Every structure is written in C-alpha cells, then in structure tokens.
Image (cartoon, rainbow, N blue to C red; front, side):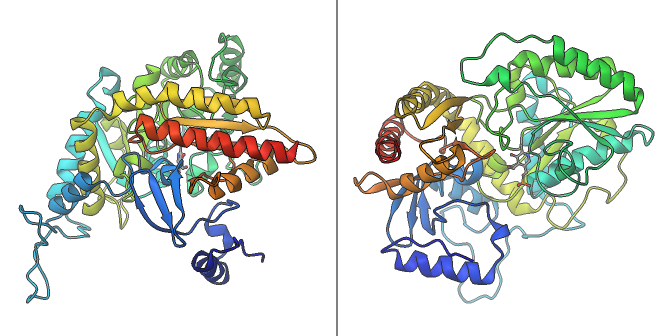
Length: 461
Ligand SMILES: Cc1ncc(COP(=O)(O)O)c(C=O)c1O
C-alpha cells in the first residue's frame, strides 16, 4: 500500500505511515492529503508539522460553530458538572472520584437527556412546519437516526413494507440507511426499497431553472399504481449532499410531500447534514417550506460530540416497544449536554443571519473559479456548496478535483493552506467552512483558493 507522504512533513509522514500499517484504509474516505491534525481553533486546523489550514469542511459539516469554541466548551463542561460555577475543575485533587453527570445512564434517565429532548423539540416546533415533530429518538450517528426513523415507520403496519428513496441520496452506510442510499444499480439491494428521481438537472447551477412537476408526478403515480398501499414511507434529503451537492427547487419537495399526504405515506426528511443552519435556516424543512413526519438530525447537532436523533410523530413511534430503538449510546448524557450547548449558541447569537450574509460572498468567490477553466459548476445554498471540476488536458475531472485538494493543502506560498474534503460523486469538491467564519476570513481564504486553482490551471493547460 502506497503511503501518502509530503516532503518536509516528518511528523505527519510518520503518523500517516503508522496508520496505514495499523488500520485498513477503508476507515477513512480518500483525500490526496491525509492531513494530520494536531490542533484546531475556530476555522483553522494546525497540522503536526505546523501548517495552518483554513478548514473548508467543518469535519464533515459537523463543527458548524467552529472548532473548540470557548463559550460552548465552558457550557458543556458546566452542564456535565466537570466545571464548577467559577469555571474550575470540579473534582478535589485528593479524591479518586468526584460527583458529576455520569457518562453513561443506560437503563436510567438523566436530567440532561430530558432537558435536551425538550429543548430540541421546542427548537423544531418553533415554526409551525415542525408540528409533526413531537418526540425524539436519540442515537449516536446519522445512519442510526435514519435507521430508527425507518424502523418506526415500518412498525406502523407490517403489510406496508415498501420504502421509497430518492435516487443518488446518501443516508449512511449501515443497515437500512445503507439500503436507502444510492440507486437500484448498486448490488444486493434490499427488495423493499424502490428509488424515484431527484431533480438533478434542475439544480445544475445555483441559478435554478423553471421546475416542471409533470415527469415527477407521472413517476409517483406509476409507482402508486404498481405498489399502492404497500408503500409505507418516502425518505429524501433536502438537497443531495454526498451525491454531489444538488439543491432542488422547493416545489419538488413540496410536490413529494403532497403526494405522500394524499396516500398516507410517511414523509422522512434526512437533515443529518443540513440541520443547524447549513441551508441558511436552522432546519432545511423551514427553508423548503415542508412539514415532514420525521426528520433525521446529526452532524452539527452536537458540534463534534457524536450525537444524532430522529424526531417525528408520536403516534408512529408509539408502535415501537420498550427497547426496540435503544442502544448503548442513545441519549448518552455527553451527547445531550453537547446538544444543549449547541442550541444555546444558535439561540443566543446571530449565527443564522451571519450564515445568510456569507452566502453571496461564497457564491461570488466560487463562481470566480470558473474563470480558471478547472471548475464548471457551482451549486449550493446557505453555507454548503459543491464545485464541480472539469477535465484538463489528459486528466479527467476526478483527477483535477484531487489535484485541487492537494494544491489547496500546499497553499499559494503565503503560509496558509485550505483543508478540503476528497471529491464527492467523483468530481465535486464540497465547500462547507464553519458558519462562524468572518467576512474577512471568507474573502481571504477564497482569494487563496483562487490563487491556488489559477496556478494549477496554468500548469495543467
Ligand atoms: C444526509 C446524510 N444522512 C446520513 C448520513 C450518515 O451519517 P453518519 O456518517 O453519521 O452515519 C450522512 C453523512 O454524511 C448524511 O450526509
């Protein structure tokens, strides 16, 4: 196995080597940089060899508030009882243990769980569009939240076993979440899952074209004629995230929801990636004007502490019995405390308005990359964008994307670089910095990206 190495990065290279020896590469998605992060603060990562990188990924849309925010961290420590009211470590140095919130409360209830559940529901129900989001099932990862939402729906009526999913979506890799990801072309499909079209052509650039509902209506009618009341639920993402950043006209999601309502089909919106501000609204269902029966939440929900949730209709969840949606980590107090600390930030700051003010800056900066010839399309909203790469010379678009990721890491000689995720859908680079990036940092880093991509273009063409 070839180990990715960079000249002059002694410490990082040693870490990269040791991981390739001791872990399968399958554990991480491919990036040509395999950046070794030593510490992170706000929108910056610092590598083991002292490189400073603008984080254009937020993990994978997780650290929406930036990395290690002071107020959020203090809040988390206090909520866990690790810090006392004057901000000092709460334990006595002469004692072996100290009383604080337990890290596990399995088969029990913690106060922090009850608070997090109440606060999350209040946040979801702030708009009337969240009326159906009446109860919460906690989990640790996005896939588990999706799985739990699907379990609840399938339990409603065993005769209704068909799940509809929008083609080329990403809902995770595990269990039922994996089953509703991708398309019928993937091998060993769960026969209960049927795929329907997502409007990809209609969102080919950020300036959306007219939406013609007719072909989508026809497809839905066809599928109803085929499976009828065996259809249990329909799951979609507000926008295709992992599928390459396709942000649909709101009319599409509204049409799908209306069709679901007509046929008493449960409508699940997977907001694992979109929640907590990414679309420029707290929740994507607010942005798109829809009222889902279930939403799946994750990633930014805990700003980096692993926590996820499926929120939805109480009458549907009631069909699950004691233990049917429980696991070791669901509703663990640390995750719940992180949700509370994150909600506190969203509710007491202007982060959503700030995110909205960043959108035109990013769209303009990313659109300018088209001038280099290496980027053909820019799609996105709020603070989540995808730039689609073009082929250049003998390099196909995917290779161009990899070269951009690598060049951004190395920077333009000014001292800083940019941390980018590896390409999505073969050739799309995701741009999703923490939403706390300032206008000035946004402009400086976009200029850095422009310099890097322009230089690469002159080398490749
Ligand atoms: C929309 C969506 N759903 C579900 C998931 C799966 O989340 P996890 O990787 O935490 O299982 C992801 C992850 O990228 C996602 O983007």
